[in-house]
Image (cartoon, rainbow, N blue to C red):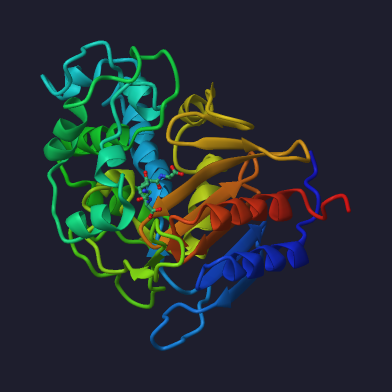
Amino acid sequence: AVLPKPDLEGLRGDLRTAQRQGAPGAAARIDEHGTVFRTATGIADRTTGRALGNADRFRIGSVTKIFTATVLMQLADEHKLRLDAPVNRYLPGLLPDGRITVRHVLSHRSGLYDYTNDMFARTVPGFEAVRDKVFTYRQLVDRSLRRPRTNTPGAVYAYSNTNFVIAGMLVEKLTGHPVQTAYRDRIIEPLKLRDTFYVHPSTRIPGRHARGYLTPDRAGAPLVDATRQTASWAQSAGAIVSTTRDLNTFLGALLGGRLTSSAQLAQMRRWVPAGTDQAYGLGLRRRDLSCGVSVYGHTGAVQGYYTYAFASKNGGRSLAAFVNTSNNGTVHTTMLGTLESAFCGKRAK
Ligand SMILES: C[C@@H](NC(=O)[C@@H](C)NC(=O)CCCC[C@H](NC(=O)C[NH3+])C(=O)[O-])C(=O)O
């Protein structure tokens, strides 16, 4: 199906609205078969007032989950991994339930509790308690296992960061290297993603980057500069740093069939219902827009940054957008509107 032309004025308006609603800055980039559209508003640094732009690197949060899933799909292509095998076959004794499979983990159907629910129940204290902490994967999984399962394996979609911590453990066990090596050798280098990094446990974002500002739970409380953090609570579930251009390049390559076999890409697109107008495959979210177009990608939320990275079915048109704030539901709703502007075009007035 031919996509409606993007509503570029609408997209600019979405970013300005997000800024009015509390985001210090916002940026978006659309790539379509070589044509590029960029727009940005607001500031990257509240101390210097420097303008935010699409060249600014930022923390992409859960968009990391697509990178981690892509590596595992490549390992499946290399016959090093079977999606329907129990996780415990590759990580003996890790999980108390031998019925939990790799596919359950990658589709958020394992039933494993999301440890971040407790960790960030109080947003700023929770963040301050972990911002300089380095966790092992095992410590994060153990936090989850202290809570009861949320469902029997395979029953329903229930989003949990624990699943993609386990996915990171699988990558390390099956490749014999840290996830950083797998991201670099299998995705970042081949696609020449010059602004994409996995620097965990360093707290620094390398090079030119937007500072990220966490919105406290208490209305009117001042923003907290959350730029410096290990993101060790997230790791293979959310610790990659990138830019709008690199995210569009990555999504275009993945959905264009250039990173996995078509068989494995089809596995990533086996959908389970995941909320209103949403479905989840393997590390990949589908959102069904008002104009009947479905887009594929992931949102991200890490302290100080919201990310939106989605593309059309075969990656012909991709949108990457971010704001340098988080924990602000109004801004999040406004930024979801960038998908409508980018893929549905001018809204019926
Ligand atoms: C939702 C998003 N998930 C992610 O990106 C993962 C990495 N982030 C989370 O699970 C939220 C962590 C808390 C963020 C904090 N919020 C709080 O602390 C709320 N008490 C914040 O907003 O910065 C996704 O998959 O789309």
